[in-house]
Image 1 (tube, rainbow, N blue to C red):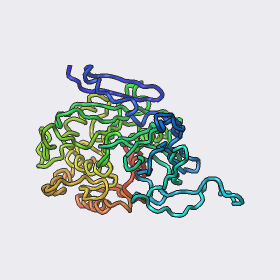
Image 2: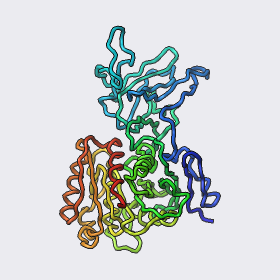
Image 3: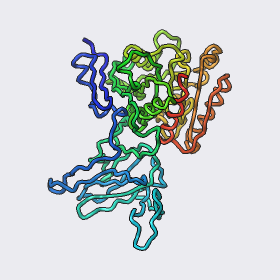
Image 4: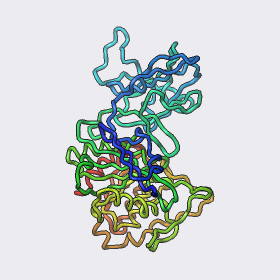
Length: 459
C-alpha cells in the first residue's frame, strides 16, 4: 500500500499516535518531542549531571533558570573551555548585558520587588554583544541577562567558537537548517500555559506530487476535535525564511495562543495548518524556477511552493480533516517570507480565501532580515502587480474578501515594502487594515500579530 500520511500527535496529558499509512511510511514518523505546542511543559529546566574532565561526573546545573524578576541565568559545565558565549534570537541587545547580583551589597537599600538594579554597559564580546560568562573552580560557566520581556526565545552556546545546544535543556526549536535551545519567560496571559482546555498539534507527513518528495507540516486542532464530529474552518499559517514548519508551534507558541483565545471566546475554534515553506531541490536537479497550477491558466514563474500549496497541501488537509469548505471558511497568513508567499497564493487563488494576513512583509520582500536570498545572476522577478492583476481587478472577488490585515514594526527593514503593498491594494479597490507596531523583525511581534489576527477570523 502506498504511504499517504502519518500522524504523530501530542495531546496533553497523553501521547496518541495514529498511523494511516503502510509500515514503511509509519517508520518515518517524527520523534514525539518534535510535535511541539500542545505539550504542557514546566516553566524551567530541571537539573542534570554533565560529564566533566576524564569522564567523571561533573556538577549538576540548571540552565536556563528563569528568575521571578525575569532575569535569565545560563550555565554550562565546560572545564576545558577557554571561552563561552551565547547567541540568542530576538532578545534586544540592550538587555544582553550583565546584571548585578540579586543580593544587595552590605548596607545597601534593597530594590523594590520585581525591579533589577542598573548595571554598567558591557563591552561587546567577540563582536556578539552578549553577556560575559564567568567560570567557577568546578568548571561551570555562568552568565545572566535581563530582565527579559515575556515570550519564547531561541539560543545556543558558542564554546571556543563551536555552536553547542544547551545540554541540560530539553526544549528545542527547529529552523530550516539548525536546531536551537529554547526558553520561555512567562507573563503574557495569551501565551502562557494556562489551566484551559488544550488542543493538539500533529506532525503530518505527506507525499508532494509537485516536489516529488515526502514533506512535513504541523496541524493544530482545537480542544474537543478528537471526541467530536463538528467541522471547522481552516487557517493556513506560513513561517519565514530560514525557519521550518516547527517554528510557529515552538518559538511561535501558536498552540498555546489559540488554546487561550478559544477558552476566552476571543477566537473561533479552528484548524491551523503550518506547512514547510522552503522547497528542497529534487535529487540531481535544481529546484524548478517555474511551474504551473494544473488545470489553471497561470502566468510564468510561479513559486513552486505556491503550486504545492494548491496541488498538495490544501487537498491533503481537506481529505483527512473535518473541514468546512468554501471561501468564507478559509484564511491564510504568514510572516516575512511567508507573508510574501501568502500574498502570492491569495491573489492567484482569491476565490479560495476570505481572510488574508501579512506579518512583517509585503508583495515582494525586497531585502531585510528574513528575506530569501536571491540567486546569483537570477533573472529579475516578474512585476507583482501585473502577475496578479486578474484577481486584483476582479470586482466579484473583492466582495467576498472579508479582511486583509497587515502589520509591521516601525524598526523593521521591510516596513517600506509593507506600506507600498498597502497602497497597491488600495489602488485596486481593496480596503486593507494596516497597523504599524513598535519593534522590528522578531518573534516578539509575530506572536502578537497572530493573536490579534486570529481574533478576527470566521466571525
